[in-house]
Length: 108
Image 1: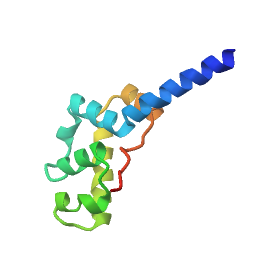
Image 2: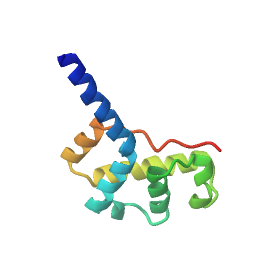
Image 3: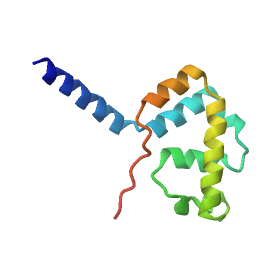
Image 4: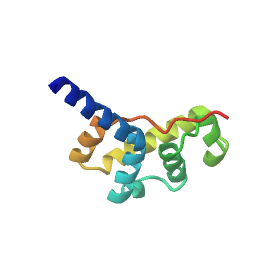
């Protein structure tokens, strides 16, 4: 019986993670901590779009000034690094435990 209760808890935790992907929570925590102020103005909307939408690097190219998808990726990961520097160690540890998946991309 204890095994079933544990299974149920894990399923509930999984559903909560699917409702609030780690990248969106990371974005919200970074925004509330003022960490976005650390980013250069030109990449701020790019990083925000990456964390909160299912857009691919290719789809984000226009937002980044039509640079290559490789440059988009580099700018995003540099931006995420800067955001992490603006968060407390406790927040980073908490976020590391969460599901870090981005919102899934829905194909039409």
